[in-house]
Amino acid sequence: MEQAEGTPPEDAAERTRRGAWTALRPLVLRLHFYAGVFVAPFVLIAAVTGLLYVWTPQIEDAAYADLLRVEPAGETLPLHEQVRVAREELPDAELDAVRPPTTEEDATRVLFDVPGLGSGQRAAVFVDPYDGDVLGVTESYGASGALPVRTWIEVFHRNLHLGDVGRLYSELAASWLWVVALGGVALWIARVRRSRGGARRALVPGSGTSRGRARSVSLHGATGLWITVGLLFLSATGMTWSQYAGGNIADLRERMSWTTPSVSAEAPPASPGVDLGVDAVSASARDAGLDGPIEIAYPETPASPYVVRQLDRLWPTRADSAAIAPDTAEVTDVVRFADYPLMAKFTRWGIDAHMGLLFGVANQVVLTVLTAGLLAVVGWGYRMWWQRRPTRSRALGVGRPYPRGAFRALPLPLKAVTVVVLAAVGWAVPLVGVSLLVFLAVDAVLGWRARRSGPAGADAADAAVGADAKERTRERDETLTGTSYTP
Image (spheres, rainbow, N blue to C red):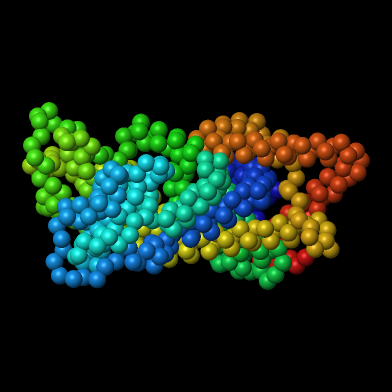
């Protein structure tokens, strides 16, 4: 075919790229379809529970205001006196750490290891720093010190309160999210690339269409394009907490020396002197620059140092830590966040931003908008599936998957590349590999049933292929002309 006059000639690389995408598009489309239909429910649950968790700081402050807040009343008691009062409240528990008040309205939190509590849980005794009254006792979870309501929401987001089995749901959602997002972006950009007003149609949801499935596609594609970077971020940071992909990430960080450094808590060889107490340790930590909220962990042995760490996760991050000798209150070791390896900093920032902590309320608002966009994209995706049903008179009908044979139709080099890429992704992100095998098994069974059904099945398959070809023609015409197809 002769090239149209005035059209710039395509170079060989461009023709090769377009040819490769033309061959790969049916496979990407089918994979995007299956992942969207079957993984989207897990993504929806993760998005809703994650959005609830993002706002837990405000929920926690409201639910435990009587424990967390006090009325300022002059001078505060020495920290060791407040700890003594807390120990009397739990005489059989082992003292673990104390979190001094940061503002004049904060209560002091004294943490204990109590037999019978779950992993990562401690008992927290809240003390009024002005009069020494015990305000209450409750459970505290993890390094964040989450109280029961926040802990319940966090566990609900992580595993639906189903233990390790439940963790598979959130890992499946995080593992597939980036695959679906990138596949959708590739399909959408290719669709609008040569259309009239392509840039506008790519970025403005619903642009150039009026109603029907074409409008749903536009809303789905353009909105998905806007939120893709955020989805990739949530997927990457979410996988750091996962059981299988998270283990691979941890191994990679270890090999690349990207792990978070910690202070040395080894006991000095000499016999320790008299413990100067937590007040002296707190003063030394403040002198060493550990301002803001801190936690002072008590020595594991009489010769071990106190370990003090900053708890502030806002920007700029304050995450310094120091080891302080009990008998001299001298700083024996200190680790500054500024000295962390760059990837350790990125990990810290990524996790805090994922949790909505890094930039405070602004961070929470951005995650809320991102989640709303994700929910809308999933909703439009299911609407597209419904609008693609072969018998439109069936109100409860759903769309058929895209025709089989996409992989078999690939040229041999592309087949090899595809297999290598999928194998690598399946190894690095195991739940993608396992679920992809499940998709293939289900697809194979459905294909076998269609073949076993004889001529009727063959006729139905031919009809589906023909209908899909007609639909691709309609989509191509709509993309090139900007007109809308109304079913």
